[in-house]
Image: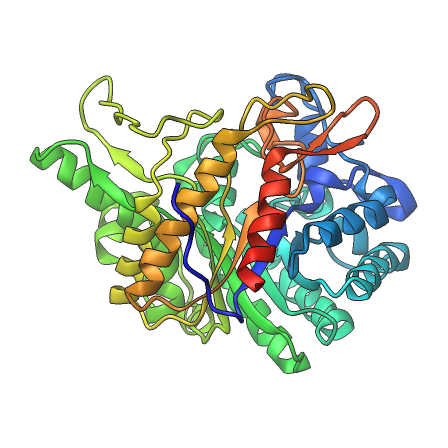
Length: 439
């Protein structure tokens, strides 16, 4: 790979994690159960039979982990809060011990000059709210707004950004559409309704946080992709149009244009959501930033079995095609369709079957992956896309949802028996890359 030209001096270099994937301490200090506690303890739900009870013990090892970040020289750390740690039932009383943990984490980050980027919701709904219908229950959106306002009130002047949701597409489609993720429902009508309630909760939360007037930037994080037809057949082109409308535009259009895409509404047919008067006005509102998570493109084939992409650059350990030019194409396309705020690439990275060898962890494939995606990001910026920063996923190996501990996304290797952290070659590379960018 060729050397990158310099990114802007104001560009943010970060790493990212999420609460359930790393914190462990699943019932410590008054934390309530989340839907992922329930789901991961249900036999057959997680591929390797594991759960998030211990994970990376970040709840107890956060100082060590922040020290590792400081050693990498990153500007910023993106992490999520566990809602049920600060409000065990998702409504009612706050749990001060939970707030203290996050306050201490923010103190530690500030001491190391690392900006904090908080995500309010990364899929771990309090089980108490799930017992009342979860995201299918419209009331959950209002509880979420109360939680958001409290986070903004307590921390809004101590953090750089607050994002409402991480990848609501996954919550709706994997949690309610095909049962791969918690709460494990497979019902397309519920899935589409949940997607609307998630967007409503985002809009309500944005209003609630703005009323508290925090000094931080407010936004949302969406997982996005281009949708490419596998062939020139009309069936494949139609499938690609449907995929882009139901996935990318379904979340972008309400936020930026106050409407759902007509093509997707028609496609959902009887599964289209119930939308109450005023909902779209609540959802549509200015963002200070948009977070974009990019891992792969959608390769759309109507054949049976579906045609697979060639994968000229290979596939990750998740089986995802490595397709960096899709990041350029996506960002330029979004710029043409919407009046965008500054964008953060809030997640990008790869799962790799890493192992410690003589005290080091060679992962040349991950270094190549990141280099290629950063080049693709620069190409988009050359086309005028306003990108403010890049967060590598992930800081460390962790509980990878329904894959358990079998997939390793980290640039730091975690031995789950001993909790020993070992910097992978990609971590050393990222540290030098950031240092050279600053130079």
